[in-house]
Length: 269
Ligand code: AMZ
Image (cartoon, rainbow, N blue to C red; front, side, top):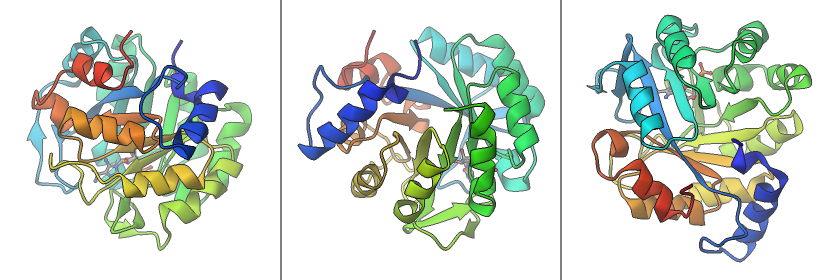
């Protein structure tokens, strides 16, 4: 079953594990390594620090999705990048094709700005919707969606220089992820996605302290993203208490395989 990190067992371990800053151990809920399929203009891309114009392209989305599933992905992280920048779902066709083609659970973000859009996607088979801008601008959206679809909203608290950023990471929201996290937990968020924009896409390593602080600030799972270059980085995010890591460039650039990453955190099948 998917959602290893959403089970009560996992959450309990996340807290306990953090308390004695544990290394991987068998009692821990499985840490998930989630490949990213970020889509811009119908193609898979990876951006550097989320900036348009920095993209490196990695082909066709359905092919990329299949490649990660064949490599052992238990779920996929899908982002409509144009959607995040433009505020509406721009790559809907490409994303629908991925959702139709894959049989693993998916989480999808980028341009989901209304309750109707979110509910429509959940009813069409997306397992979790990721809300960034809408969650910041109208936090009740999270509660409204969660009421009928519990455990299905991931709130994206991506941060630049410690400040949450929205609208494709082009605008500061004037809050820190740590200050915001508890509120979204109370509104019914299933998890917090935390992308550290300062290191995202640079393949130069992760910053664990902001992850640790966020894990301390909330009882729901934290999915960490940004900067993973090595297996050591994946391990460091697990040790910081994250429940899962989204990995993009490092997988596309073959820095390591998905199986190696899963083995590094003891989450291989
Ligand atoms: O790379 C970017 N500039 C970027 C990006 N990857 N901007 C936003 N996002 C992602 C967030 C989240 O998953 O990590 O888009 C989603 C949020 O979109 P929205 O439309 O809800 O703010």
